[in-house]
Amino acid sequence: MQFGKIDSVEGIDFVLPPDDPQSIFGIKGKGLPPIYIGCAKWGRKDLKGFYPRGTKDELTYYSSQFNSIELNAVFYNYSKDQVEKWREKTPQGFKFFPKVNQRISHWGRLKDVSNEVTEYCDAMSLFEDRLGMVFLQLIENFRHEKNFERLNDFISQWPKAFPLAVEVRSMDWFADPAYYELLEQHQVSHVITDTAGRRDLLHMRLTSPKAFVRYVGANDPSDYARLDDWVMRIGDWIEKGIEEVYFFVHQNIELESPLLTAYFIEQLNTKFGYQLKLPNRDGQRQGNRV
Image (cartoon, rainbow, N blue to C red):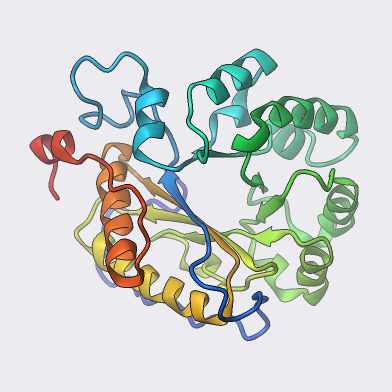
């Protein structure tokens, strides 16, 4: 991921801000919530060294190692046939978290896109039980002043059968209580983006008890300490009653993403008693720093 990319992490404060006091949680004491952890891509080129020699299908192998994927491919293009093929390649329990297509979010800017939304949701429905939460990413120049009503209309009309999360990249949204009220009213999750070059977007405001986190490493040793902090924060969320956690690991150079993700899973298993599958890291260790 290039968003928030910087040349050096020197001088950056990576301390996680405290939870926003108005964050929404579920009922305390219900035990460990489901947690879905994955990368943003499964392509062999992006995750060089992750796949064993002789792997014939990347998605089939990837889904045997992780329980989810942040599906960015459908932002650019998709088809019903492709969705069905992806579903058939993955085991029960695996989840796709698809990004809303660019015709809706970037080209149409949420205006007069009802036909596009219908077409998109019809395709995503073919994931069936493999569908996690859809997320809408809004470009940085999609600013609050001119677009609040547009976002309000879009969310109000969004098909409720498809759980939704929203990621904004312009700080002016955070200043308006009505923005949070809109998300809370429709039980839309507020995507938390943790990236080195945009610490201002690390808002820590949960508008539903389902947390959607996009973590972007900087291909730096500090990436692991940052993940340790997230492990502790998720522990806090568990005590507060978080219902589900979706956590996706990116890197500026994506080939190290499986290593970071495996490390994160290992820490969660150790500290909280999760029994998430620990991905195979042998190939990554041969070519990359652990």
